[in-house]
Image (tube, rainbow, N blue to C red):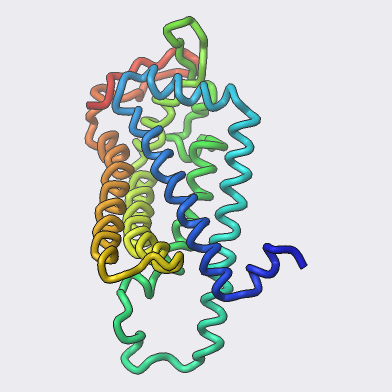
Length: 251
């Protein structure tokens, strides 16, 4: 039996795995947000960033596969721990919940599964780039020129097209609200699972979890809200691919 199997068969081991994979996913969420916020700069900024990532297929696919494995372990541990807890106590607590439990903790599994569904949607939207999710346009054919003359996919235009659909933006906002709830409890629980909870640091850890989750929510939510509010000026209603899309910078 290998080390991973021994850890997986232990409830404590699965809690450690959830904490460590949760930390990795938190780092990804922060990095992904920093990349996406470049949409508030000149179009070339985020187009150059996206082109750099796509020009490194080994790095990009390695990160994608690593992220997929991390999500699988995190979700698998959550589901098995939840099932084990229910099996250990088939009769619910009087009053509906354990004494002292935070309301967010009672919805961690549900919010996590909805976030997982959102991730699948997000991949179909901006990785597979399905036309139905981008205003009916095949955004894969939209191109832009960088300062050095390199023609690349116009990711800036793709993001605006995608978020112009109200239901898509609303779904994103709902998912980010659930992520806010999930992180608000998950970050503090992560430190507790790693044995870092004490009376001195716990208030600071709880404050960090709340502030970090709020900042992440506001950061992600700002992009679809900006597009829906028309802060990019004249939107790309009459753009015909593969012609160059000219967009004003979102401000």
